[in-house]
Length: 122
Image (cartoon, rainbow, N blue to C red; front, side, top):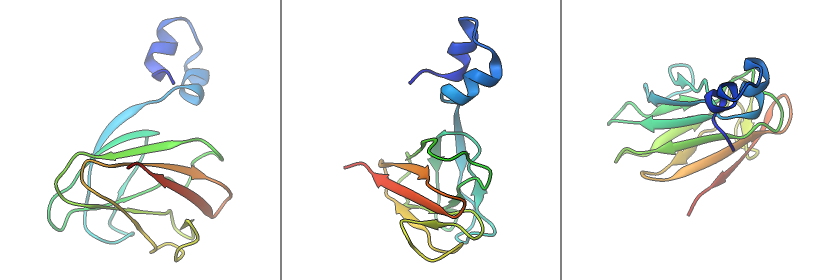
């Protein structure tokens, strides 16, 4: 899939480009709980973590079936939380995180207003 900026560069309307393309970002984890977690704001996120600063959370306003790719480039496992009232792979609502190991990536899809699916790379 193309980057949103590249799609705008070839003449696509910006709103359409954002919906069809990826917008990469880099985020640092904060804390270890859902309320203090760093919000994931783009659909392609590179994560950095440090001891005790590992939490990120998926966006509450994500559209259904839009893939969110999260890659951890740090040597510390990241915790990815759902938005408030959300669940990842049927886990505990709001506080049920999934681990994202070092140098691994996960794909997240919002299936409904509260349900997310997560797929991990090898």
